[in-house]
Length: 92
Image (cartoon, rainbow, N blue to C red; front, side, top):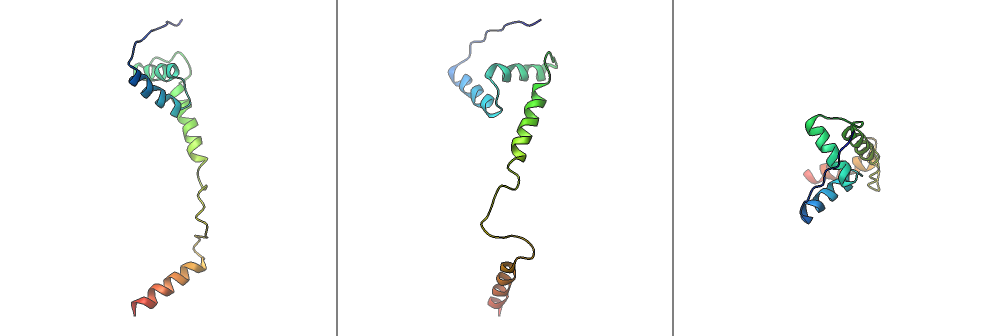
């Protein structure tokens, strides 16, 4: 069984909630329902916070290895040797 709850909140509060909901790809009502369920330990639906957490983790991991500096950065990089040679040459 479910119940409807009507809340009256300020526009600023709603905008903040909308921003938070957009960040985790939920509607404002889904976000609030999830937060209330998490806060009070009542889970009438699958734990949406875990689903949101998993989705966020997958989005984060999709960025792993994406940055390209435009030059090699490996340990056998010849530019590292050249940079070290220049640094040591300047010391003397």
